[in-house]
Amino acid sequence: MRSYKISVLALLCLGLWTPVQITAQERERSKIPDQYTWDLTAIYPSAAAWREAKQKFINELPAIEAYRGTLSMSADRLSGCLALLEHLNKQFTRLFTYANLNLDQDMRVQSSLALQQELDQLGSAFSEKTAFVDPEILAIDPAKVQSFLASERKLDMHRHYLHDLLRRHAHAGTGDEERIISAAGLVADAPASIRDMFVNADFPYPEVTLSDGKRVKLDRSGYSQQRRSSNREDRKNTYSAFMGKLNEFSATFGALLNAQIQKDLFYMKAGKYDSCLESSLDGDNIPVRVFGSLVDNVNKNLDTFHRYLKLRQKILGVSELHYYDLSAPLAAADGRQFTFAAARKHILAALRPLGNDYVAVVKKAFAERWIDAYPTAGKRSGGYSNGWAYDVHPYILFNYGGEYDDMSGMAHELGHAMQSYLANTRQPFATATCPRFIAEVASTFNEALLIDFMLEQTKDDGERLSMLGNYLDGFAITIFRATLVSEFELRAHEMAEKGEPITGDTLNRLYLEIVRKYYGHARNICVVDDDIKSDWTTIPQLYFNFYAYQYATAYTASAALSELVLNGDKTAKKKYLDFLSSGGSDYSIPLLLKAGVDMTAPEPFALCMAKMNRALDEMERILSKKK
Image (cartoon, rainbow, N blue to C red):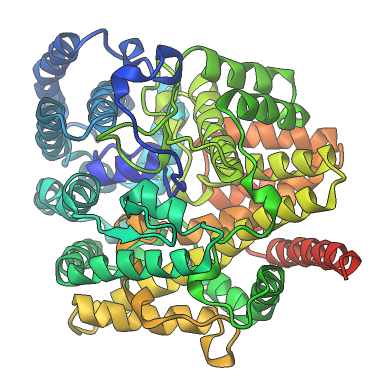
């Protein structure tokens, strides 16, 4: 379901910002061959065309007023209103996509920032104009809504939206209340927007002197590269300098995150929920117990995580594992580089189990400039897939650096893009966007196919050790670290709900406490030095209202689904492709159940832990040969 209430932050969440590691050095955009940059002219041929489309949207927007106070009159009136909303929503998201992609390719360009700000204001006006719709529908007798659905086929595409609206009846406000909530949207998105601008454009990144005497700036790419250094002293100094500089601004970061949490509290209270967590999960109809079960299961399986950490310590040959060792290369093979062309070749081969049609579309993504591949000056860091240009195609922002993680990250984003593409081509706009809860299934599924393919291609123990290390890093980051972040986010929100202060200092203490628990600091599994307390400031998902836990739940789901597909089950492949094509036509739990996995049961998580332990077993067997 696509919400008819436009929220800029909601769009960003569904744009799927992903914490991709950046290892390549930035270069000037003008020096990147066109084939490695995205082509935004497929959305609008120029900024002038964008402005024409924006004005057309502004001219059409007042037409929605004609439906105010009439939605209960007939199925035709309700259908007409929702059809107009769908049309307007589609135009707005296309405008939004162009403005944001245009800005993200160089955030220093003020004219691009102006486009985004214009859209922020227009989005707020759009929300205000349409705020009457939900309350009016909720005021209709549910039996009458059902009779409308039975008598008017044009309402079929809105069936899930209407049922979901009735489900959340108790949390809806009056028309006036909904208008106030909508009007707050522009201000509510400020914490995330300010943080993004600060860390991508204005943050004074530190420098560090390496063991060879070279002076390196620890911007996002420099930090990512140096923390992977094979020189331990360089890693230690990199972490110390980077985290130290972040801590200098902990008061600012604390104020920003507090503003985000206060926003979540506002929406919690406006929606009459008992907690921010319940408010967030209810949008996708996810039981709170699913979140709680994840945190409980992860904490009960920390011994498996600690087994991974002890194995990492053994491979690195250090007497005491520190947090700054967690990104160190596990083997010489980790130094292998993959050109973008090589990554394309490996990814296409790895995705063959999903069929020729799937692979053909991925080839189009590479050939037809859906992807902005390399880091350039002023470009947004990390990576994401944006599939909001419904009548065009998805776009991928990336910062390719040539390491295995970059290749895996590209497969990840292509998973998002393919889910958007299949849903956009097979669903009406109203049900094209998948719920947040399942958004990371397609991405992590592709990662699983890639590692399986790469492991099949080599028998060399060193290379296998390296790839298995990458595979286990995926478990460590996507399940254990994502859950750690989620527990930190939950605890911070609970503090705010109790009226406790949220400052940089309190967040530092809370984060350090949780990280030390997960990494076994008290048991000397991994020493978490005091400067790691500032690491929470690097996590953009904290501004997406309980998004991070979905990496872990999606990873467990994709592990189960990929196992079935890789075993050659043709029925499983069809079910999975149908799942990708389903968009938001149903709730997350039923969609996954149709695909073959029950996320309310313990089996998916147990399967994940079994797969992780199998990988650990193989790594230990390889290491035993070297004795």
